[in-house]
Amino acid sequence: MRRDASEHSAKQSALELHEHVNRRVLETARRVARSLAEAVGETDAERVRKEVERGMRERWFDPPLPPIRSWDFLGAVFRGDEWERVRFRPSEYPGSKNRYISVWRLREKQE
Image (cartoon, rainbow, N blue to C red; front, top):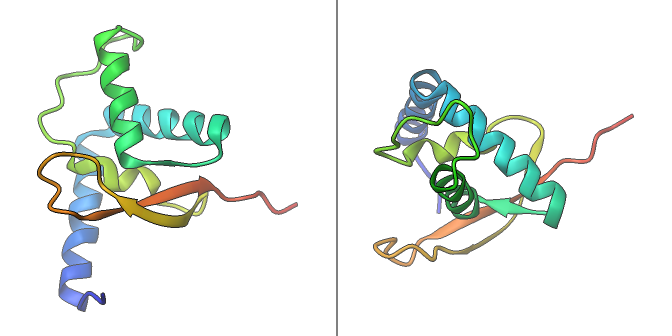
């Protein structure tokens, strides 16, 4: 499935806005994603969300994260050169309408 340029541009703009508005939450989610990928080799947005939610419940973060009203920012977690898409898998979240999500791993560092 191919996106047209305006849809791609709108998505990029939304991701950039999320990076600006939710900087602390996004950076925390990126650390969680890196940790998951290092531990098991790969991760995805849903696993990151579950782990961040768990951390908020169990008070891992100091200071605590603000309430997260929307998880739309998770697409921005995997932006940048350190990640590479491995595959797609079906979403497990109710209401996902049988969508597929990306599974990511950390890109091997070139020496």
